[in-house]
Length: 312
Image (cartoon, rainbow, N blue to C red):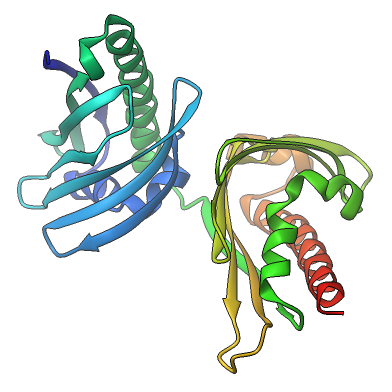
């Protein structure tokens, strides 16, 4: 099979360590990088790690397993897919962070890949995905490294479920029925062409009666958790990722705890547009925490009621 090679680059006004740390910490990627939906560590030590990653490629959700080598001294991160997904037969590459001067670096992102059966259409598909995703990731990396303040924060809400925890999971998993089950959901469209990978588009009512539309990818781990990333966010946010986790009680009973967690990043340019003149980023943080928390707690309460009904 033919080996294809590409390289993309960007200049970032930030110290090498700041940029390296953003590349090295894959737990940040779902928030920072537009294509990345979710990442899980399968194993890791100080210099190497194996990860499973879910990301969008040419509008499709793909998942693969990669081995990464971390070199803090050389500010380089190498990667090689161990389990690829068609039409990719093999792929690897490297993040290379090169100092240009005080507080400035060039980031080079290289890829080498082979397509299944050397199919020309597959080669073109991979080339387009690599080009699109590399550009998006490098621009997002530049923005994250250069932004003057920390605009991201996380929070969570929980509820104890007396009924079967499996029923609470089913309630969250069956998001296609939320418009009939949740008062704050005006419309929902759920598709699941690949098992446990859902595309959820939803119209949500806010406290003032207005409606906003979001579009998310949800990765479901049956009975354990559902993680998601919004591909279309409200105007006040540049990023929103979240997770629903389902933890069984240690007593051996059927109940447990359901937790809704969010990580969001404020869009500073939208703060005064959305919240009015004089509003600050701190005002936006409080507004988002209140609005998202209220919806989460409402969903958690209905999930708990659904589980109690299942027990009866």
